[in-house]
Image 1: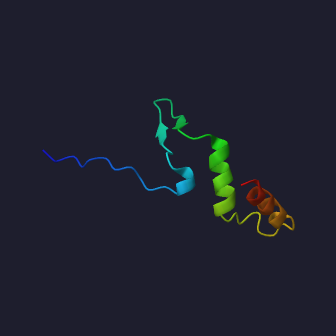
Image 2: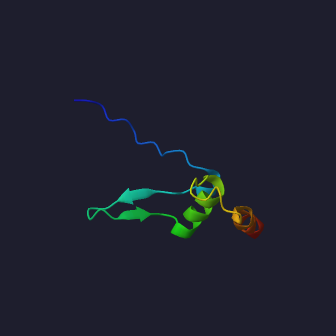
Length: 68
């Protein structure tokens, strides 16, 4: 029989510490953090190529940086 490796938790950014994602038997995603916090993190860290040409992109990102 093959030995099972102990499950290691994946590395995540410090802002998302404690994030756990699971898929239940109905195919629904169960998450341990609110979706708003995840979306806020993604808006700051991920470049959205659909929004690159927007004139007000700096204003949008600046507003989210001032909140912290």
